[in-house]
Image (cartoon, rainbow, N blue to C red; front, side, top):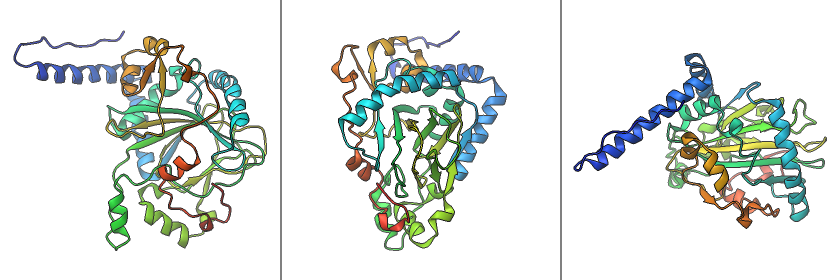
Amino acid sequence: VFFFFFFPKTKTNKSVNKMINCHLNRLAISIFMVAQCGGYETQQNAHVIAGEVREKGYAVIRHAINIEHIQDLRDAFRPVLEKRINSSQPDRGPQRYYATPPFLPPISDSQTWMHPLILQVVHFLVGEDAVFCQWAVDTPLQGSAYQKVHRDAGPLFPENDENSELGLPFPEPPITQIAVNFPLRDVLSLADGPLEVIPKTHRLNVHQGEAFIQHNSIEKELEAVYMQRGDVLIRDVRMLHRGTPNTKDPREMVVLGYSRSWLRRPEVGVLVPKSVWNSLNEQGRYLLRFETVVDDDDERLVYNGTEIYNADVLKRASGTSYSEEHSEHSEL
């Protein structure tokens, strides 16, 4: 049962009434999530996981998502991937494709982007008023290569990075964007094309990250993240990482994007069909409150294989600062 509270309106304090109702509704959502997560114990687990992300830049939750649902997602994504491959060139390196499937069942199913434990962690990291803004899949095929080491977001305050070149480094701000990744098949060896990360580099600004790459043996710093179906990776998008070659069947990795409510990334977004919006509870609508709701027959819900978040946009979004010569294996 979902409870919402309404403060009696008065003629003189409409703004106060609105603010109180807003906070009470958020409290109701939080109470509901704790109940769904299994109570206080799971909330404590979420706090520990969030602490690990703050410290290392990432954390892995094992066996979080139902495997049958994972298979449903993979089946639904196959025709999207085929159209993506047939419609345009790879945009994340050789034989590596980024695709945003239409936000329709089972893609829109709340088992993933509204997973109670994931949302508890997200709220600890980017606030109770966080927004959900991305549902996409990154897929390296056979013939894919090493990406250059990079971060997934440019500097929040570019002038800070400019000053750091003059010897006035500013610390990176707290986390503003979170990526949640999970594979649609097992990724258990280097042949599967796992994501490689460099822990604790989320605290480096762009220029510090570039210096880190120049003055360190990157191959020794990188750690592969192995995951089974159902496992979930939660990471700060600023942490240095790269994709690796996949020598097997397509390795689809879902990326769910969450951010602070005041941050908008124009290169990502969720186009929400009206039928999906109508099926959501208040929590789901709150997460998607800044996304566009469209009629179910809107032509934009028919995937045509093209992407706004292409290679050129990726370069700008990631800061464009990590040159390929800094990595032994490097492809954009």
